[in-house]
Length: 339
Image 1: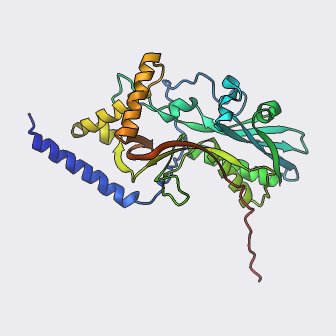
Image 2: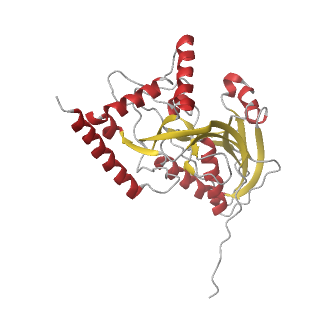
Image 3: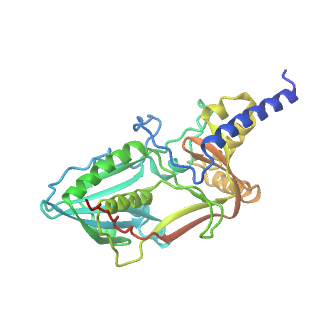
C-alpha cells in the first residue's frame, strides 16, 4: 500500500504542474472561448427529444443571393420553449433570440438562429454513465438556417422588428462568416461567470448561446457597413453565476485518469449527480436541497468550459437571471488614405 504522505505528495505535484501550465496560457480574464478546426461527429448516445433544425440546414449553410438584392434584417425574440409553455417563461424574461431576413428581389424570407443540438439541460449539465468514469457531455450548439419567418411565433409574445437593410453582397459576406463561425464554435455554454453584479465586475467566463450568436452576427453586419437601429430597447437574457477567482482543475484525462486525483473526480461526479435528468419528485426535492447546500452554504460550483473543469468559489447572490440591454452596434467607419 502506498503511504498517505506519498499520495499527498503526488497530489501536490500534479496540482502544481496543472497550475503552472494554466499560469502560462490562461491568466487573462475572461477565459477565451476555444475554437476548433472542425465540428466533430455527434456521439450516438446524445439524442434530442425535439430534433434540431427539423426544416432547415443543420450545418448553418446560407444560400447566396444577387449582390444587387436588398435584404431586410429583423430582430426576432420569443420566450424559451414557447411551443410547450406559451408565454410563461417570457414573463420571467427567459427569451430565445434569432435573426430574420427578407429578400426584395426573390420575395423570400429566412430565419437564422443558433441553439443547442440536444436541449438546454444537456448543454448545462452532463450525464453520468456507469461505463464511463468521466461525466459525459452532450453540449454541442449550432446554427440553423431555414426558409420562412413564422410571424405569429415571434411577434405574439416576443419581438419581430425590422432593424435595417443590407445589400445582397453584404448578405453573402455574412453567410460565409456564419459558416466558419458555425464550424469552429461547436459547443453551447449556458453560464456567464462574474465576480459580482456591479458594472465594473470582472468577467471570468462568457456564455456562448443564442443571444451571443445574434450579437456576433450584428457586429459582423456592422463591420460590413450595415446600419442597424431599433425603436425599442434591445434587451437579452443573461444567466449569471457569481464567484471569486476560479481555480483551474484540468481536463478529463488529468482529473479522471489520475488515481491521485480520485477525491476531486468523486467530488465533481457528486456535484453533477445533483442535476441528473429524469429524477423522481422525491429525488428532485432532495437534490435541490443538496444543491443549495453545495452552492450557497459550501460555496462550491464545478464549471465545465473549453472541455476543462474549473472550481468556482461562489459568492452572493450566487445565481441571477437578468434581462439587460445590449445596444445594436454602430457601423464601422473605414478610413481611406489620400494618395
